[in-house]
Length: 457
Image (cartoon, rainbow, N blue to C red; front, side, top):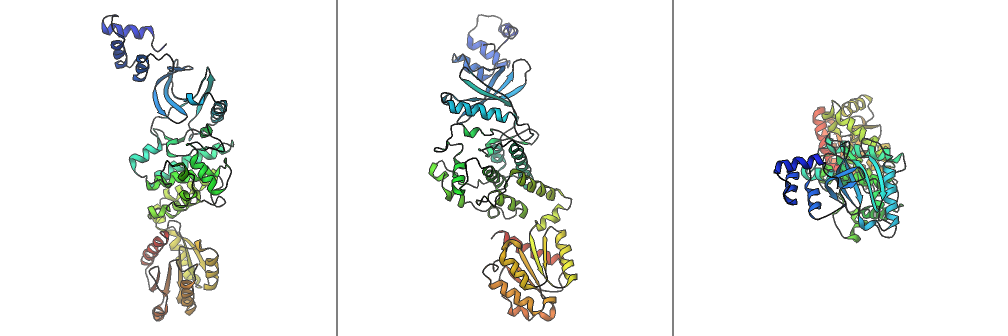
């Protein structure tokens, strides 16, 4: 078997004091002295004659079993380098199409050298044994990591998703898609780096008419959205799903083994918005998740590089020394309707400083036209009556009656002399009236409360 050297055997017999011992006694000593692994000893006890070596790599133990392959921890017989060996299961070796796909995908993956992709060193076939040799990542996969932690901090989830997107963007340069993105296919290194594994291997035992269990979620998404099987934007959608899961601890897609349910469009339509699960999530992060998981593929990120750019920008905002202040606004858009330049500058400066995006408009008619065309242009609208006068009140009430804008939070700012306007204002829980003078800190507190309400709609 070549599992042991003569010297190692001699040392074991020396400890036993005799060679006249049973195989079981000898194996116990060899395992205790770590000259054999339990995996090797069990195979020997069963009389197995193969499966101890793949090429120059000696198998130490089984790491995991999937639907199409088994993964072993192994060492190079000469150098002692630790690797993972992924072996195609016997049920597939009689199908030339599956074998060809396994070898082709392995060779394709071997071209990829990136910090966020587990490298493949060797792909081999012969004597009806097909395997690939990969880097062995010391650590757990992301599914196990999330299971233990329940959910991750925004910073952690953002970092790992950035790692994933970086690996995808690099692979896309070679025209390579993953096709089986899920938490268990992301390995966590001992240094905290997320690394993708199994690029393209989901295509083994897959065809257009009968999606295998590994690709069935992709098939369901692509049927629901009307895109071709190899659309790279499907990888982006499932990256968004992983980001959602890390942020909330809850998988966005209902967990089921029922094939028809997994292929149903309803499963994708029924996803609860991420900010409904956790309303405290930063607005910028919510936007990234929503755009990555957009069912309208034209509105989804069009490439992993585009997603990566937004993730990196979000990380920079979180890491800024003014992070706490910026998180107050969370990059939410606020519209200020006022014709006084001094007032405009005062609000623009103070709100931008704490992380809001500020849009200034000088009259109510233009503001309403803008909002009717795009209700996402503002999470809150501020009507400054001190310069607009009665036009501000009329605009506020028109805003409240308009079907497209009535649910957007709004603030009506009045001077002391304008206090009678309050009785004529169409107020609601999310449409309020405030009398000046007003401290900026108080105004920010009110604004934060209102846009928080908006984020839950």
